[in-house]
Image 1 (tube, helix red, strand yellow):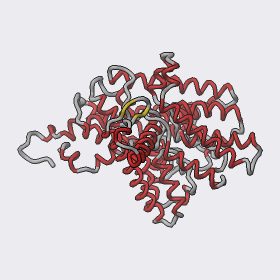
Image 2: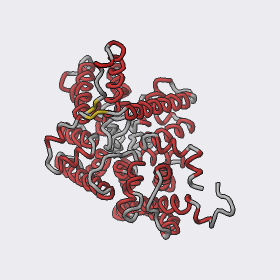
Image 3: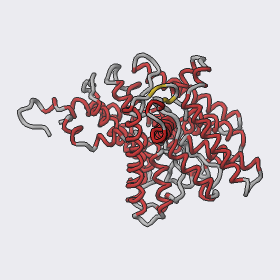
Image 4: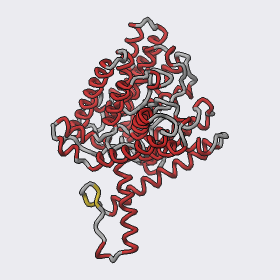
Length: 483
């Protein structure tokens, strides 16, 4: 803690490092409220317009003192992780205010909805979406679009000056790949690719029969692999194979590594298509679709079974969360496959959540190598390779450590949700869905009490940041460096 005699209080790191950066996060999120506010004015939704304007002005006013402070040029890893973890909590709080001020949700439910939005988790506590103000639906979808590429990345691109500890903050938001030599250029390239795909998706959705408003909202939530829809019945409400086909294509794009997208933009198609993680994701997805299709054929005709399997499996594996059927009514085998996909997730450095395909591949190969060690002489054991790259022992250990921490958090959270009286399997599916930033769960979210809601909020937050920044936030060492 801060002690007298250590210098002026404004030299305490939490004031000259954390406060300026969090103020910029607040300003970035508050500034985006102008978008739904303008739509509310255009649609004569004056109550919502006043809510958005009030939150935007209050946020910008509150962040003004911090904005006047110079942003730090250098950050320690722990400081970047604390900023990232707190930044997401702050963004969700600001994003929740329009829901609660408008009277549509209680503060806790509003924070749940906002956290689900920014973490691109398709869980919602709103019902009868068709009768909600369109400006609120746009804000709901827009939070997922912002969260998909990253709240901190959005702040770095539009609010923070160049060089403000960019790489530390980039990594702290659960990313590692460089798309360019300079970190700031990597951030810019991610947003350019992301925005370009979003615009293309909106155009294609309009072309296949979706209204412009619905197309914009769904283009926001499909590229972000978020899963919020403008319809209570999700994509099932549209009853359009063409719309489903477009969404499946963009869900897969959302689940792909941004490095692969960068290769595609540069027309390096061979390198992109030979990416080991992408090929593994497609293989797992294809196998899952085959199993679910065969399982559904006991109830439906072959064409319907394949259509349902393709959409549900793609949606769950990419952690988007759209549905075209009641997932609670699926056969047991199909449910089991989808729950497994909730754990696997998409590719690293994508908008998808969960453990990620590359980590699953490392764990599988490491386990196989341990089996070989038990039956073969040491000279016959080959180095651990993934995607043609030899992994160091520390790499495999780091992945194993992440997986253990991930599953321990799942176990604890499941017990907390079950403590409210929910069935254990339903509680487990809800936690896996929340922590994997998926959405659909085999439990009605409207039956959740405060303990379960807070638990799932924590799971969504930790899952989106891939645990480490959240774990660092709760260590005494990190806070000692800030005081």
